Structure formats: structure tokens, C-alpha cells
Image 1 (cartoon, rainbow, N blue to C red):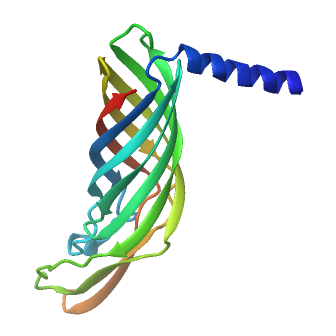
Image 2 (cartoon, rainbow, N blue to C red):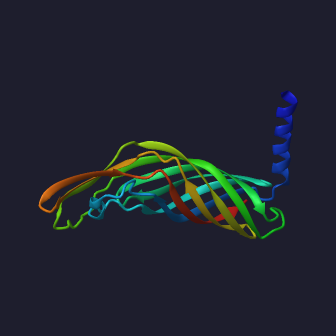
Length: 210
């Protein structure tokens, strides 16, 4: 066991020595969308909070180990038009195409998980449809962890790295609940819904290596 551990330590030390400008600090901009709603209900068309897409931005740090990169950071977004949240991803990137020492461009796979913090719900001013009595959203948990996989493409210009990521998130638990009350043929209908279990995010970033 000890020789194996020593070999792994030596391997990482050699990777660090070989890596040129192994540290990167950067900014990501993009969007995040959870498959929502979970079920197709008539009242979904009235509830303005059932909006899956949200803009996202954040800062990150990346460490290069020749053919493997480790990335983490913190991102803020406003999910479902109302839920202020942040997530902290921890990711590994592996090289699919390109030479990390000589190539300008590269293609990488991504695997990781994100710790998501659900903060406050902001209710903006809404216009109600004539048939709507009320609609609402509430969060059902304050924190959750979900894995993700994806692809990354990078372009290196000197010490500046440009990147684009497409990520698939899965095993997302129920984090919000929607309630819609409306009239249908003169009768009051109450419908409840929630978010789906998967999502997609897109990130475009720029970083400085040192």
C-alpha cells in the first residue's frame, strides 16, 4: 500500500513540475435550466414562476495537472424567475483532443458535482390572468447536491484561456413547489407542481494563467 501511495504522490509532483502556468483564475457567464415543470398541468400556463431558464455568473479557480484539470468556484443565479441561489461546483476535466503543452485549442470531458444553496424567493410584481385566483412558488429545501457531466472546449492565447462548457445535471431532487389556483368553467381548480430531475447549463469563460 505504501509504495502505491508514494507512487501517486510522485506522479502528482511530476505533473506539477511539467505543467506550464498551472493556475488559472477566471470569470464564467452563462445560463442554467432545470427541466420544469415535472408534470404538464393546465394551470402551468398561468404560473409565471414556472420558468426554468436563469442567467448565471461566477468566478472560478482551476489547477492544471498536465492531462487532468481540477476546477472549482462559486456561481450566482436567479432560478425560476424568483429563487436567488448559488452553487459551488467541484469538477475534473480530462483531455479528449489536443496537446496540453503545444496545442492552442483542446477538447475535454467534465465530471463533477455541485453543492447548491437556495437562498431567498423574490416575488416580483405580476399581472394576473382573468381566470387566475393566485399562483405561488415555495422552496422545499435549502441545500442539495447533484452530479453533472459534460464537454469543455478551450482556446489558449498566451496566458489568456477562453473556454466554453456544456453540462448535463442529473439526480436533481425536488427543490421547489408551485401552487396555482384558477377558474375553469366556473369551478375553482387547485394544481400543484414541482421541478424535474435533470437540467442543462452553458458557460462561457475567460481566465488568466499564472
